[in-house]
Image 1 (cartoon, rainbow, N blue to C red):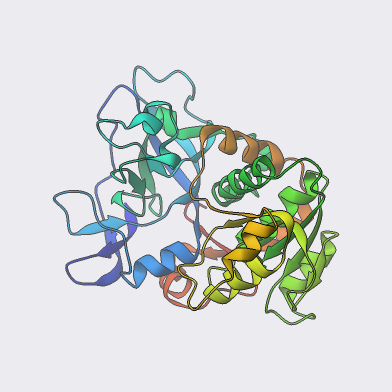
Image 2 (image 1 turned 180 degrees about the vertical axis):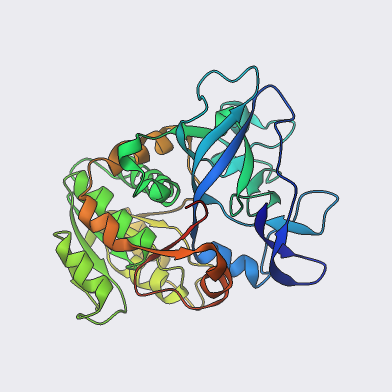
Length: 337
């Protein structure tokens, strides 16, 4: 089978031929991968900024966003069956499990010894076939096949929105999202679905495709971080975005940081103290957030979701991973025609 991989010994991104995997245990599931999504994490991996291959190997199969079909299942598998359309979770718990992993919250792992499909220590899904454990899969309706590949980034957003609302005092009704990429737009759609008036702030010009898509979704768009909001989500992955997000916090406001690596210079902490504001980080997603993602995909305007996605053939993997992001926020590679 074909697989897009990072060779850590040669420091190279390539496509390699590998044997088709076979279920090794009773709870293993063989997947026929239909689509694989590409995001900023994949681009950072290809720059060898983080990540590592499975033990005993020099290469890692990429791809942590996927849509697949169950091709075969082990004897103990009960929740999925051949023919089911599924999306796959990213993170596997640490071994032995910490208290968080033991309660099925590997997204809150306390040891950092987790593995992640296509990122850290476990092969991903940018291949013709892949293996996953039964507990890592969620069945999605066939009618959602055209947008189901968005479930993984949406699960991350669901957790962030849940965290923001849970930390805020009752009564928060306004939100700002910094960044108009996939995570940013999905964040805005989730907050909008919760009845929260939401503005997206990003650096793309007012007449850009992303700005037009934000407005088509019934959201406000601005290129200038002005005003205040009860909930602020940083979804751009830059220090400047994080600084802008913090400055947009209203009294009692909650800011959730999803991507910014650091915040250089000084930030006046006294403002957080005097205004009873909160700042939190969030990564990955728990089982409930995955279920929320599958549910909410069916609630969003399908036309908006479709306009987010640019589909490319398998062979253009290097262009997507090593090049600049496309005009549309989500690049998806068709693995199986």
